[in-house]
Length: 387
Image (spheres, one colour):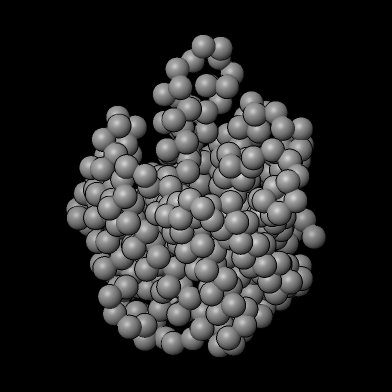
């Protein structure tokens, strides 16, 4: 079992992430329909970003980075440290201790950064070019978690530390990682095989990684980083516009989203759907910059959550010897896509019609819960199957 987890750390992380996503949905369902518990706004967000997305990111990258860089798989020590972090994180979440929660998340992210940097420095080949966004995402996560820990740990710290940290963790880190990993995975999944050799030309290049990256991509990453700085400074509309422009260029240049997919399955349809939700959600944030919470949920639920579950499902099936034959089936991919888009639209509409605000939050949470259960039933048993 240890060897399998070392080779595929997602087997340890994905079930944890799914359990935390289920818990986050239940918080809203109980509060809205039964009046149980306190208002779960911030807690719900932390469980989804610092729980579900967090452990799917850790599991995916600790599985993928060694393969992209042709370096050793996770060591026993790294897996033990990951287990310790998971226990510490779950315990602190159960106790509701803010500082302990954010400290445990910071420690796990530091483990991921060290894991990735060590393998990058000793790589047998360069990672894909768009992984420059992955490097930025890792730095944003590290800085964001550290900033939030400092705010909670040091009495009298300015709220700027908390605001900046949450911008990095909630708005920037996940998106940067999606742009980076998606630049390699999305075109391959959609069947645009001519894009993949362009990425591989960087992997097989003899110059150092940064010298092999096209300058336009470097400028995109720099513009994305600038958009985060602008948001921290309070220039929200400009920051959203710059970020949406970067997303749109990446979607056109690397994801080839404007073209009909050459590989047509229910799985690729939902991948494309989630990518479009990211693009549309980002521009909706520009249009509603003064009150962006509704647009953000289009981005979070219809984009981040849907894409994460789809990629997580593919990783699970391919690493468990199940192949991609399941992607030809309608269920669970279409079912997950429909319920998540329904959840995104329902949650976004809650801010448009205040009279149904609470009920729409509950309905959106119920849709999320259904999706998480469907994914768990479809993929968690497969996680522990070997090739």
